[in-house]
Length: 303
Image 1 (cartoon, rainbow, N blue to C red):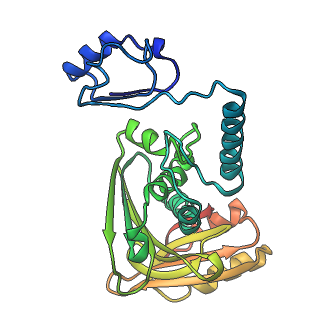
Image 2: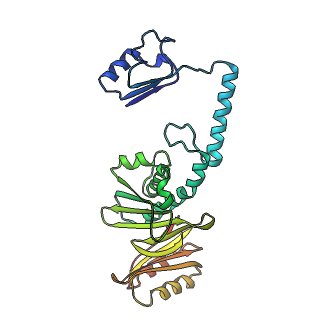
Image 3: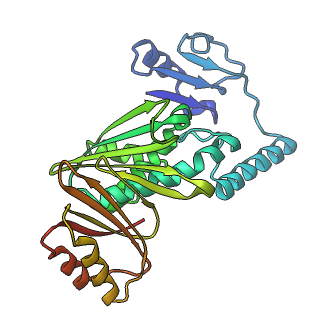
């Protein structure tokens, strides 16, 4: 455990803290306030595991006004731009860093939510792959965005960019991050792979022109589609007639198709269809699609 006290010196018993540091029950401490200022006993302030700084304080009207303005500016920046500065529970990013990462936070959350809705229950492992220029950035928040998207599909407790990592670890989910400076097919892509008790699934995505989010592949099958709104996910045997039958069923119920993307694994004789639709697919239509002999899985995903 580490201890930081920048409030009041009386909050910490200095003798107890010194003994805890020497016994290594406390790994380190940061102090800018002491019981007596200036401190008479320098054993704590000079301890190698202590960072001690002068007590600047903010007791004058001028100091409190400046502190108030700075806090207000930082709250404003977070609410308007998502930039968190001087936060103790999330990475501190500059405005420029946040602007570069922001599209990938959206991509990570939506791609994670997509996968969580097509995967089995009881999540065990999440693998996140950063490729190209994305691999060179501070991706801690991207990881948390991925976990947020996944966990909000499976938990009653709301996950966010701050608590997502802790929530995943509390539930025994193993988190693995991989980086590759160069990918042959796409630059700056984000890959996610989930392993549950019953199955494993993966997805690859990227940020396109003008910030458009796109799926590039599912389960190592190349299939490109917009990552937004309502998506009908279909996994089927690669045989003739499936696309036509699905289109007919949707058309008969006035469900408009915005985009129909198909990917194939010819060796495995398997295909994946991603159908972006403008309207919700009625349950009876979804059941009819599932009843097509070649269809193995049909689910509606919302991101």
